[in-house]
Amino acid sequence: MPRSTYQRLLGFIGKLVVVLILGFLVLPAAVVTIAAFNDKAILSFPPQAWSMRWFAKAIAYQDFRDGFRNGLIVTAWSSTVALAVGAMFAFALNRYRFRFKRVIEGVLLSPLVIPHFTVGLGFLILAAQIGWNRSYTVVIACHIVLVLPFVLRSVYVSLRNLDQSYERAAASLGASPLRVMVTITLPLLLPGLVSGWLFAAMLSFNEFTASLFVTAQRTQTLPVAMYNYVREFADPSMAALSVMYIAATAALIIFANAYLGLGKVLNIEQTR
Amino acid sequence: MRTFAAPALLCAFGLVAALAAVLQFSLRAYVPGSLDPGGFTLANFTDLLKPLYARVFIDTVWICFLTAVSTLIVGYPLAYALVRSQNAILKSTLLVIVVTPLFLGEVVRTYSWIIVLGNNGFINSILLHLGIVRQPVQFMFTTFGVVVALVHVTMPVMVIMLAAALSHIDRDYQRAAESLGAGPVRVFLTVTLPLSMPGVVAGVTTAFAWTFSAFATPQLIGGGRVNMISNLVYQLGFASFNFPFAASLCVTGLALTIVVLSMLRLASRRLETIEPH
Image 1 (cartoon, one colour):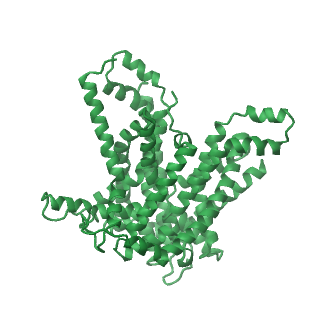
Image 2 (image 1 turned 45 degrees about the horizontal axis):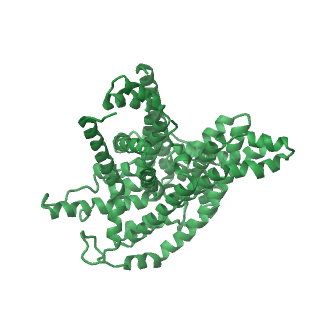
Image 3 (image 1 turned 90 degrees about the vertical axis):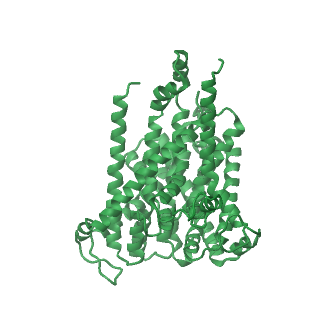
């Protein structure tokens, strides 16, 4: 079908709008990168001299180091537990009927709309009442609950797309339920499980608001350390750390897209 | 079956217990100087009616509304491009640019916006350098600055939800409209947009709830001059240790979110019944 001048103009305007929006999305990352390599301690554009010293300072800063380590501990526990809990419950949701199924599902998905400061305050009060405050346990428990909805969705979508005839074929050939699970179901679910775990890990590592409530000085995670730094200091160390953060996150996303297919995981592939 | 659901039940129980703790604290009296609450009272909720606090509630809902609507307007073209682009490399690039900020966390993104919007920041440097303004434009500590940063924070989730809806529209409807002579604008307005309404509703609802939950952005960019409920809760909890009052703010905030979200759902259902498909 030949395209008229009008349609071409419309297409051009559309592309322009999309480019402008993309510009808005990447602007902060681009600006923070420029600021991170600026030699001066005070923010100025364009920078007069370039240096790497803020990267060195950020890596050497003790609170960032501790925050990174604490964050890894919390993330490793919470994402792994959330994956196990979420995958098992997604399986139960997909395969069985049971009482209060929708109620439990609703409660577990509710952190998507409940403000994180409310969840954080709740866990803080709860922890204080049973004397668990200032421990990793309460931080991890809070993170599990917060990332669980994402794991649940991710695994549930892949379970729904799974062709059950493979399982029936294996069972009819005499495989025990356990063997079917280990040799058929789990391998077929692997992309969903890996992406669910990855999402949970990244969300947990970056969770801030609830963490601010439930962490103490000893258990403070990296985003909390960064927040405290921004409040106290204005030098570009934080910009340097942000650049490392953005680079690492973008690399993980590119990896996830290449190996897991983000379009499929997020359920945004064109169906027809 | 029990073994599969039991751990999830435990998690659900933990969350309910945490929320119940907030509810319980909201009904207790504040004892100055003590972390333990006093007896049961409704005083926290009557205090909320004071103009100072009522103001913060109104501001919060207004900021959430502005952010949700702006994110929808800015996010829609991007979601459309993401779903409809034929080029695989372009599509992956768009997807990575859209999804990466989702996992950067609020602090890194808010900090970046401070550098962009500050008085010595990127935008003001350019404006001053080009001689467009003589004095830096005040973006920091304004509602405008907070909303711009919040739109950026909420954008990924909006685009993902819109893209999910757009990708599940059967393109035959569009082709049918085109073959009957409808132009691209008309096809969009009468076919694509109405069919993507579920995504619009889901996106706006989630954007609203996420903005309501935002803390670092209004705290750092609002700088105490633009306050949302989250900032007030933190301030009450950690500056004056008035946890009962902080809890009552949480409970009211949650009730408010539920009311607004169900109103949105209801409005969208009405819209669906009114609009012919």
